[in-house]
Length: 442
Image 1 (tube, rainbow, N blue to C red):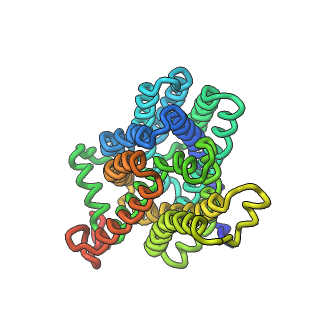
Image 2: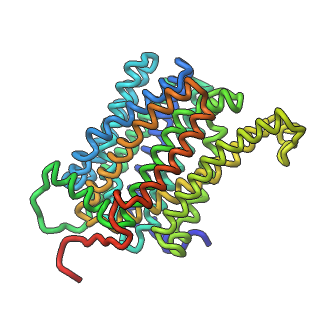
């Protein structure tokens, strides 16, 4: 069995189950909202650079607010932080229903939604080790990513596409507001909250001290450092994919931007497989080796997505070649390029899920319980900061030379950057470096 009985038994934990329920509702609403905004911008402008501006609006608040937000996650009651966050995002969804036809308001409200998310996302991540046992962290993080994937399926594959085709964006944003309100209710009525056992009260660190501590924990040993590098790099590449995908499927696959679901659905299937296999793979290989395996597979999948389209087009133009899946094109009416892309999205989703689960487990294991919020905040800030240059470059390059060359350049650049950061002696601790949690020696 891929999921062990003790993993399923985690659902008997009342507080953890409530955390999952609120996360599922919030992820469904958040993904539906992002999908709708993405389609609105693409349909309105037809520009990958405009899409990059939308992603920039979602990214900038993380750079500015992630560290103080992480500090607040360690100081404020997590139940209050999560409840207030969902209520504020519900208000933003209602505002989008009124102002969705004005790009300026769309960008500003997207930034506001991201700013709110900076505060409750670290609190949500830090709540996991507070409500489950240490030996349940892998399974608990798998469940957390499962709700993320289910939220993507409900929001991006079902809710938003259906409501956009049947009704209009206003209906999507109204549904999002309702889901956010439901998530806030689940959190608010959770008995016991989401804090762990009370520790002796200590003075709250200042912003600079919290930032230094987060960096020290993340960069203090080799495994934590590489977990940060690989997760940050994968997030940056995934955001580039988001920028390129709507025009990519329009120009390369010759389908409408609204049909992004053709790629999102198989990626979600792969992510689901990753969730089923993450716990046994982590038990077999360990969290660190699972992370390395997932990251390598993710990079190979992105490169394959680029190369196979070039090869398929070359063979189609210059060689009388019928791929083994050509019957799909003849019988179903779906081109072989679309079919190949859909198939490649499955290992892409699997790999990203596996590395996400494993990276968070590694970070959970390395960070002291009282510092979880600021550690995830620093990691999130790094991901947002290092996403900016490739994000903006991808938007500009895609409008200038097209989506395929841009995606291939991004994949190659990722391999070069990851290889350098892995083996360079200038960055990160030595291979044998160890991080020791402050406190008495065991």
